[in-house]
Length: 374
Image 1 (cartoon, one colour):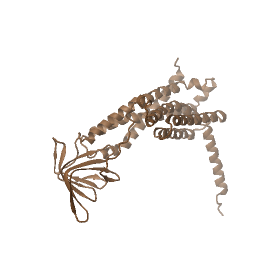
Image 2 (tube, helix red, strand yellow):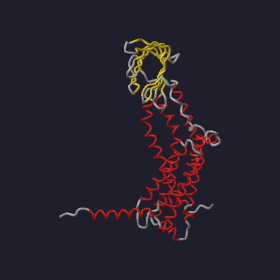
Image 3 (cartoon, one colour):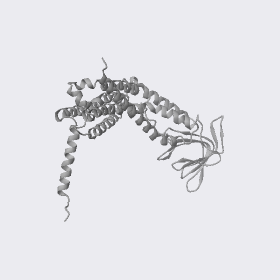
Image 4 (cartoon, rainbow, N blue to C red):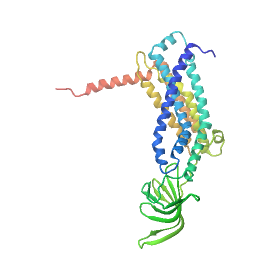
């Protein structure tokens, strides 16, 4: 394929927008999660290392989102710039078909879809696996804890813990007092672990507590408490099935429908990356002699709704995941096809024109029925 001046020009427009959108989105998502990560690791040692490794593990997920949204904006903004500068009218006047001048944006989208496939298939599970390993070490206390002996430490949600000293060889706390808001427990020794959700697990060994109205003493050899946002319980929480750390080639042929549903959901990400140029072509071009952003914003809203619909497939239960994935994909294709047909029939910026027309009619009605000054 010979690359001409027009191809290089469009590729430059698209690449600049793609890189900017991916960078901005990834930065925003990292900044959004930092306060939660800081709170989760507030009692853990080697806090900076855990935060750094956690962010690295999350980057594939953020890069996948950034790539899909970035591809839409890359193509949409390239079309919009060509249109508002009058360059697109010149290109079309020379008889250049859309399939020709859209060649570079389409190629960029195909390469982006390949990245999304590799990311969803293997990079994201690798990042999630690394993420899981870090937090398993944190739960086992391998990084230590930011706890001071000889004083009560607030664990959140009304829980607090006191200990006299730490046995570094055994990795245990000595001389514990645990307060769960209503009851007080003391024990000769025990352990503390923290989960990635910020919840805790405390095991008290050789301890006692006061129970009942008669202040009877209950002695125990071992008692484990699980601290959650809903309160404290002695029943271990159910371990959720985590498909995120499993590569797509293992999920798609699994007997478990839930695993296959996650695999089909990941494939839909690839389909959405491929569909983004068509969505941008149908909505990004404003009407003649206008710079209306209505179509551009509507396309972004549709893209977000498409992303949300992937969650329906990944969390499907009691249904055939393949059929549901095909139904979602067919819905996307139908919406994009209708938008392309509408643009072909009504001209560039069909949605913008329709919305502006409705807005003008609404304004006239408002003026007509508005109370008049005496």
